[in-house]
Image 1 (cartoon, chains in turn brown, green):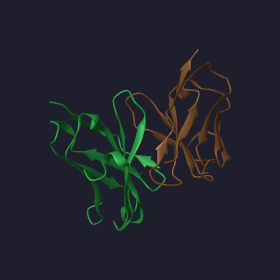
Image 2 (cartoon, each protein chain N blue to C red):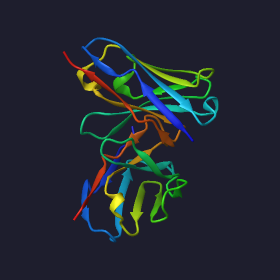
Image 3 (cartoon, chains in turn yellow, cyan):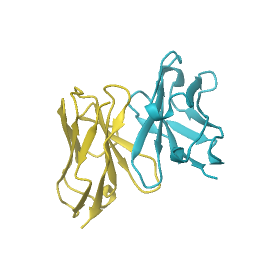
Image 4 (cartoon, chains in turn green, brown):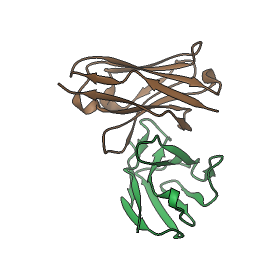
Length: 107
Length: 115
């Protein structure tokens, strides 16, 4: 199985900050990676697919990059509604695997 | 607008069975892979199973193989998860998701396995 190592597990930041979250795959997954945002009590929402493609209606302050084994999600200028938990997902091969999550909190 | 509505969750005892359903609308259901993902209380996301458009391919996480069965009814725009021999560690919110790449998710249904 492909292991997805996500870091950091938690992060404190302020409105307006630039934030980067990283996922590392245990083996190459091309660009078969998505990023999801989850708020408490809600279903996850996809932000990015194919490592760098922005889901429709997702603000452009979110961006994704990477290929192979190293991937990043960047939020260019944090907004109050961005405080949530973020997960990466590899769908290169079964079983699909998620990163353990990054909880983004207000400083 | 894509809508996915899960149902069928509840409280069951270890060893019992439960069947979850997901009603889909707002897209061509028969043209999409479909998925189940779960989230134990306070924990992260775990992919559970996928099914191809025509049901000819199905994939499962190891922990549910032989106990869970994913299926679909394209005429009814519905996805199912038959869960047998349930264990305490199957306690989670179960989400259905559209597509091979989990593009859209339902709101989830809670399954609690406890004596």
